[in-house]
Length: 289
Image (cartoon, rainbow, N blue to C red):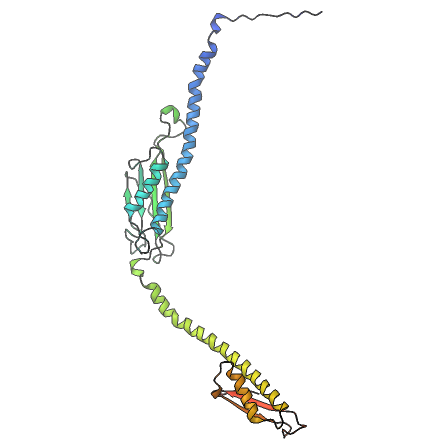
């Protein structure tokens, strides 16, 4: 039977508490790495919030204001909306570390460049100059800029190793204003008045053309009805034939007083066995045979 030999390892006195010391040494490093990763993830969340705040401000500048009026909101109202979005989404964001610039037609428009005038709120910051709308001076671009000095969610030098000191972010959104300029008020009315005559002329031309084709169809059908009546009645009955034509035309919304008819017989006589009849209907100078 085989024998198994067990060897007992004895711990040296110098190794007692070694695991505890290693854990105590590694724990700060692990925490520093973890907190830096948290700050780095928060940085991207902050970028999304910084992109959303000026967008909402620009939307309000171009579409907000008093309901049912043509009054655009003021720059102070727009900046308050932007700050509400920043301070509620980003920890540490305040008017002391977030600069906001609002450029809107409500502030005024440069008559030379067609660029909206701006107001700045918060700490001093040099924002890029706003651009003019590609179709100015008919339209104006409203613009909202936001600059924010980053405040990490977990402060401390050891926890901001991957974040540069005094890191600043700038985001801006430009949108075309839906509010007409004061000098353009009534422009749509003038354009409509100029185009209305052309539109009315075209509409009446189409109507008259349609009525002409309808009249032609009615006179052709009336002539056919009159001819059928003439060939089946003894002697042609010219009076009855004309009455038949007038009755048919009158039922088609035509003025029968403007219609004249004449009945002729190509065979020379309306007496049987002659059975050919010709009817000519005329309205306002036109004729159908």
